Image (cartoon, rainbow, N blue to C red):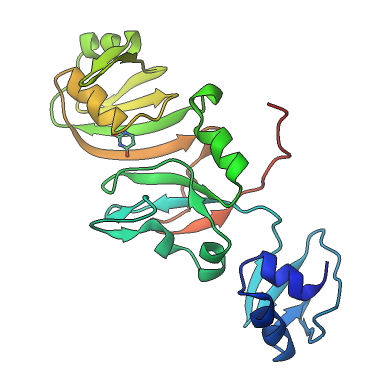
Length: 231
Ligand code: URA
């Protein structure tokens, strides 16, 4: 693939913008400026620099972000800034979108991708992707409430019971809760169903990924994409 096309695929603007960046000597590979838009570098392990910033080549983008409170995951944010504003422009331009949503006041692990099929696979109820939440509660939680959450509780306005796959107390007023679904405000509604109230909500795990301790709030990093599964 030509360098201009590589830049285009990675979100550096239209074809003319990418050719202009290269012609202006703003793109380098392995420390050497490459001003030939037709140059075809090996893609395996390619890292190019644009205006001094290193970019690993990723045919598909998969990222993890430590979402802070006060940003929205929706495409058209209503009351707060968009979580996409935390990403550099090339990632936004190549169409990276959140995988599912977290409420504006929820913090923690949010995956993002520009791969629609992968996004679908990770959010589809059919694929049962586990999510782990650290839940801070208003009231103490007792064994009866934990048993009810594990057995399945009925949410307001939704007859299908919502069940925790795992639920363990992590403090008098704190739980670690694992669920496979992602219904609207599901954790808050599950806690309301057992007479409690969520005061803080933080996601620490999503599928096979765990929020790294060294990923600060508001920061993101690349995640390797596995080859697509057959289902
Ligand atoms: N459940 C909620 O209630 N809110 C979230 O942000 C995620 C899960």
